[in-house]
Image (cartoon, rainbow, N blue to C red; front, top):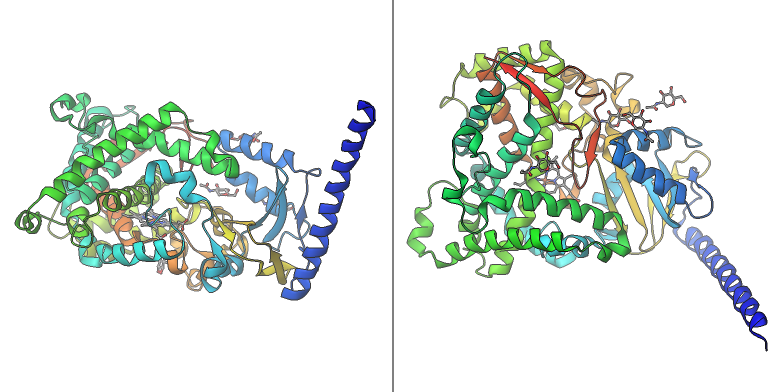
Length: 520
Ligand code: HEM
Ligand SMILES: *[C@@H]1O[C@H](CO)[C@@H](O)[C@H](O)[C@H]1NC(C)=O
Ligand SMILES: *[C@@H]1O[C@H](CO)[C@@H](O)[C@H](O)[C@H]1NC(C)=O
Ligand SMILES: *[C@@H]1O[C@H](CO)[C@@H](O)[C@H](O)[C@H]1NC(C)=O
Ligand SMILES: *[C@@H]1O[C@H](CO)[C@@H](O)[C@H](O)[C@H]1NC(C)=O
Ligand SMILES: CC(=O)N[C@H]1CO[C@H](CO)[C@@H](O)[C@@H]1O
């Protein structure tokens, strides 16, 4: 046989195998649909056979800060826009996209065991190890049982620990931007504020990233175990984690030296505290002032790896999410002076104009307008805008099939279901015609009483956010103290667009700096 014929032969064999695979796959799908009583997807989106266009568009929009708007457009342009579920192909891989609360409820709650996180441990393992945020199945269940008591109300209720961090934040504001035109990036400070308070809660000592030269501190004085580099390294590592997650099966391609270096900075610093806790005597552990996560967890386990991994899992889950919430809240309040004014009236009425014993977990919860502002911020800017679950077996989700999209559709084992909370949160079907307007007042109206799974900033079902109360308390406290301290906030003209461009890695924040100034 000549070489030419051989090449042709392989060429045809390949095509043959490919076609055969498609036929078997098609028949198998038909069989499963029949068996599981699923109908064809009402909305099918295909950009060529392999869906390269969709993949590349998605990457472009991410870079541009407009991915969320793009997602909304994709849903809006489907054959039946009122059906919030579709099947599409990204780089050839079939995935299901949904914004339908019924389907979100199914994957997160009623069919919890049919879905899992998939490869999250492989993507995130190098930084986070095995913890509540990265594990599935029994490992997750065990973590959840162990950690839940640490988030009981009285553990997160003491707001006093936040005041020293707020004082540092205020010092930055007064140095940089408590004068007309003195604009500075508040989001960057919020990131430091949340990492400072979270490390104090978790480790018992804060990284104090807010203490820098610009407000008269010399960080070299307190730089042990890589404390000075910790916040930046943790930040940087997370960006690599999000790239790994984006690449799915090819995640291992992203493993540069910089990533490894950042991870080891984070681990060295954490090890320092784990050792400190493990070497503490029982008396020292009891004597800890205030609540420290590690000093409680060490009563459950003395395994240094478990202590470290769980602490870092919680740091990841809790830190950027809260910084994002604070940034978007101030972003909106700065553009709505009447809302800032109303909030200020409520807060000065409840607490006066300075730090006071009256500001507690309970009393913050009684500030109705403040709560409405936070609810509305998390509606328009959910810190975790989209998420994924992967089918653990051939199964169905309740909606998206048949001519009207009201019948179940098939999800094959291993297929991704991506759910877009941001898009659900902006759906006029649930929030009315002004769904795209920031309007805290809606939370006092009847229409928001029965949203159910259409409002889901903290996830739902067995994996609902453990830190919801912690986050809302911290955000309420920071906003309360800002509102008490300053009469007005201004955003630098033309520094942001509306809707703002968003940076979406694992969580969402403003892509452009939040340039504001305050007036005493
Ligand atoms: C505005 C702030 C926050 C938002 C919007 C938020 C939202 C979420 C969401 C959507 C999830 C589900 C993730 C998934 O299953 O893929 C989650 C999980 C989690 N969150 Fe939060 N979170 C916030 C703050 C916090 C804080 C401050 C902490 C801790 C101090 C925290 C601890 C956790 C933990 C431990 C999980 C994993 C729960 C599990 O898988 O069982 N979160 N959060
Ligand atoms: C980039 O963002 C701008 C608005 O910020 C938008 O008008 C434009 O369509 C986006 N371009 C792409 C390619 O996504
Ligand atoms: C969706 O499409 C309709 C009409 O096709 C349009 O009026 C509406 O503004 C679109 N919404 C978004 C958010 O793109
Ligand atoms: C961390 O990253 C965010 C955005 O991703 C940035 O705004 C912030 O300044 C960074 N913080 C530190 C301490 O590097
Ligand atoms: C905010 O949203 C939660 C969750 O849906 C709801 O229970 C609560 O009543 C809302 N609070 C306010 C003040 O609107
Ligand atoms: C702040 C934010 O990201 N919200 C966006 C979510 O998606 C809608 C629809 O595209 C945008 O209008 C919002 O601005």
